[in-house]
Image 1 (tube, rainbow, N blue to C red):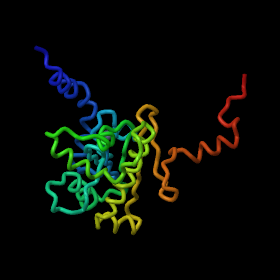
Image 2 (image 1 turned 90 degrees about the vertical axis):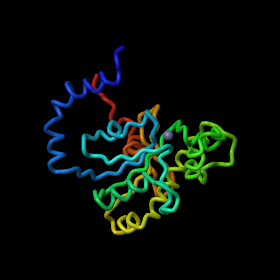
Image 3 (image 1 turned 60 degrees about the horizontal axis):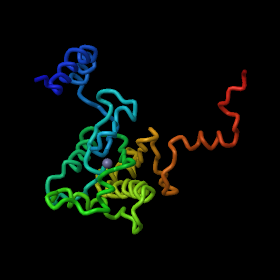
Length: 220
Ligand SMILES: [Zn+2]
């Protein structure tokens, strides 16, 4: 019986790796030096490297259900995400931390429903997003807003990590809140001053709105 997964491994090893061998060797010899910590959702439609046009070794990625940041409190158990944050900040000295939520997030939708009785870890984990829930009838609009509110909530929690707070205040780390719209291939970024999520090229769009002919080819 053909094993499609093994076929994929074979393709990587024979087709792609030879072209990347030198790059991987360099990253092994010199170690990894990513400057960005990307905290994203497990959702299969979120593809950090594609989204950020990043190569091998450029992003330190931690993914979990909902792109949540657990509290800075080791008493609650095994925190893979908290450990990744500490490693990225203390060992890798990343300069940017991105919390990336996304449209149609199953974790955010699950905040409005009862999880299956068997999903004990999920029920507990979802507590990390509960403060983002809106007291409204469930709608796509409410879900998008909840997804965005959750990103802001996770950033607040990230600032409770002393090593993060210290570096943000010293200007050594920059935090970014993103809302990735899967169907539009577009990221809305949190404007911390307004509290709103805006198009990443809002300035360009505003300039275009002032000059509607900008970018229009006037030649026949
Ligand atoms: Zn998600």
